[in-house]
Image 1 (cartoon, rainbow, N blue to C red):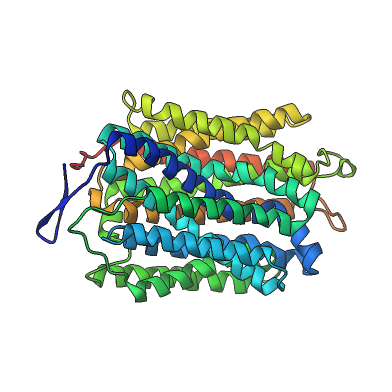
Image 2: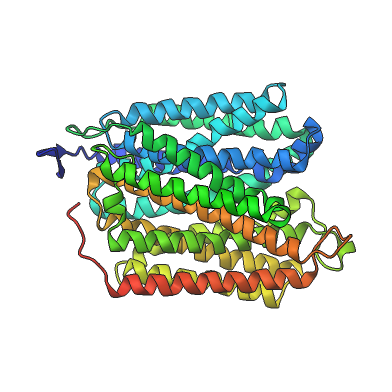
Length: 477
């Protein structure tokens, strides 16, 4: 079995033995699940962090934002390193950083050290694309496609797994106990990777474009900052708009650097391929919608009855609402590889976007009891699971095997931006629907946000259908 030519030579691939493959696949899934779950630990702990460290909620919010930021920056860098000969060392070193960061979140240190630890934990998000690269290199083609789809799904539902567990531990033992969960599972992931990760195929080379990485980091910092600082848009619109322009300019500068670089961080020319470009557009718009609904449901469930709606759930019980999301997301991920033998990946993307839109419609029309919230979350999970499982097939169909990690890493950066914007859009709509002197938005604001989400998923559906009409020929594996 051979890979794509690199530098005029042929890359030798090394499929693992069947017995080793049985161990490799669970290891890939476990590592992808752990890094996603640990990065999402900040979500249910924001209030607890603010109370424990005596900081504002805005400052505590950075325990989530800094993880997303470091993950978005690390993902393309790790993707490029993972395309080279030192992929195993890259995976082990990255997990070691994540374990060290997890230790910082547990030790009795000041708030700044907690942020540093969360940033180190977020770096692990870049490993998802490397797990896909390992699967594509070392598993038979038909097996690798299914495993890559599941890795993509697991990286999504990890949040649903980590949220209720972290919330329960926070209620029982405080915020340090909740972060202790991250230390235990990341240490287990490091041991798993050390025991199971094979070496990359011979004949590859990878150089990190440092200037490109620095400019991309600056641009993503601005994007995620603007997405997280909702008060800036409502109180200082001119400043926010100016920073947005700077972010766009930096992204343009980054694209020019990548085009001129002999060893780009991301192969922008490949990203400009119609299939990849449209898939990434569908990812960012779809990501906005998907994370918007996730935000709406969890926030609605925790709103106290005194607001005239909501259920006043504790953080832990609200986290249980995510169980249907995780379960049905995993079911969709298992079903998608079978369905894609009959239905093209772009059509699966379109169908999954329609399902997510149905979740929005259900939430907009019926949310008077918890069963309806569970149903909406389950529909969302099924749609997100199908979308996530189908997305790698669209991109990898036109991507050489040696560029798997790099291509998927860029898609995950796009996904992170989409999710951040989805959270910001939800916050802005609900803030606009909050009357003077009120702590909580009007119930109608949730309906408005749901209608916006339906619009986002309609755009995603049309984009995916456009991609299906011009399905490109696949590359050789």
